[in-house]
Structures are given as structure tokens and as C-alpha cells.
Image (cartoon, rainbow, N blue to C red; front, side):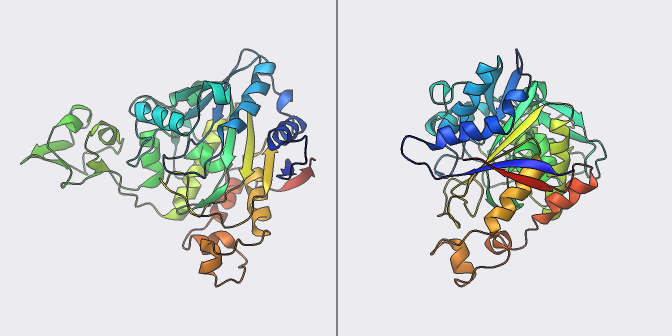
Length: 370
């Protein structure tokens, strides 16, 4: 079936504003048709790693939360802890990072919950119907417990997946630490012996008895390790990390499977903003200049269709002179801006696997809103 994707550009005349345009767009797309009364509504957002300035402004969240409250819903922002070392690896630092980047109850109109708890271990296993690579998705409990999910996506390039949109925000963003382990790796955590102090805290959380310490250095028995990643969150010296050895196509397909599990049987609505289209993910503690001009706002009930619409319209845009894309293709616009920006990625696998799983291939009808 062809899904409707609603679109409005980022041109605002005097007496109008981008926030008003976003409000009109999501109302036209049908967000008010959802029964939200007394329902917990998760607004899935990426707060941006501290130092990155390409993340979405918190003002956009308030447009959504105001509508949810007007419909009797209980909105909250949510994201899950990261697998890598940074300011979002545990709930305490994650919340501090969010506040530093401007996300708080005043600017957004709602509270923040870190979906997988203090150390990324609070999760729920949700079945993946028809899953090829995963049978259950390990999802942050607060996301799984929500009655409805709204994704607010910063559509961009990505160094592993080619593109980052609604599916990545759902699949990767809602995964707990062990879920992210499953998505990113085909192996197990490893120890950086240069950083390890031999404190043995990792041993205290290993249910498989896979970790030993000798000569003040931890060692992980790969045969015993279950790959849960709990030791990563426990290490105070950032000495344990994932191996990030999964093939990129498989990562995309696992993301699709996790996305399907997150929204199964649950009302869901998706908003993507194509602005500051960065070469890399907002997980970086820095950002490069955008590769294309700001495009606009998208809204749909179909996460696959909205990702395809964002991808196709982005491909039609002119390059920004001096950007990483412009330099990489020697000032000649390529047919595939995402493949050039991050070679070796294959963004098409998102849509190929979505079709295989019965989520559709992303076919859409564009509805333009002023």
C-alpha cells in the first residue's frame, strides 16, 4: 500500500514561523486522530552528543508535547544510553548532556526519561515477527511501557547505515545496551588493557562468570560471554567496549527488525526534519557543515515511507559548496549523495528488508502543506 507523507518547506513569511508550520503539518497529517487520553506518549528524540551543534532544537519537541497534552496525553522525551564512550553512556550523564543541549521541561513542555535506566540494563525483550537476524529486540523498558511512540528524527547521513531517520531512531535509538551490542556486533565486548585498572567492578555484573582479573587487568572469556554489555556500563574507566564488527548491511537489517518490534501493536507517528544534513551521526561530539540546503518537515504514520521520502527529496537538492560532499565528488553532483558522503554504506538495505518483513517498501504519496 502507498502511505501518505506530509511535507512543508522551511520558508517562513513574516507573522509565520517554522514552529507554526510544524504544528500545521502534523495536525494535517493526523496526529490529533490518535486516542491519547491518559496515555503515556513517548517522544523519541536524540539529544545530540555534547559538542555537536547539528541536533534538533528542543523547541520542536514542545510543539509536539503541547498537542499531546491538548489531547489528554502524558508526553515524555526518551532516549536510551549509548554503547560507546561519551556523555550519554549512563542516565546521569545522559540527562546532564540533554540539559546542556537545551532539553528540559521548560523548553520542551515535558519531562525526560532515559529509556534503559541508569546503566543501560533496564530493558524488555520484544518479539520480532519474521525476524531473520534477531528473534527478540532488547528495548529500553520506558519505551516498551509507553502506550504510544512519536519519533522526532533529525534526518542525516550516517557513517555505518548511510542514512539516519525514523527507522534508525526507532531501531537503534530504542535499543538498550545489550540491544545495541546485538545491532553493532557479531562478537563480544573487549578490554582495553591500557585503560583497565583491575578494579573488578566488571566481574560483579557478569552473570556468565566470563571475566577474570590477572595482574590488575581484566580478561573476557569470549566462549563464556553472552554479549549483554553490562560490563561496559559498569566500567568507571571506559576500558571495556564493543568490537563494532558487524557488516553494515546486516546492521541496517537488524535495525529494521528492531523497529518492527518497537511499534508492533502500538500507535506510532513519525516526524522527520531535513535540516543541517550532517555527514555523520549526531552521536559525534562535533559536526561538519551540512552537505545540502535545509529542506523541510515531513510527517507520516509510516516510518519506512517517511525515510524513503526524506532520502529521495534529499537526493534532488543541490550540494553546498565547500561541504564534504562537494569536495568528495570534485564539485560534480553525484547520483547518490549518501553513498559518496559515506562510501561502503548501503542505505537501500533498509527498504529491501522492510519489504521482506512485510513493513512495505516505503512507497508514498506526497501531500504538501503550506
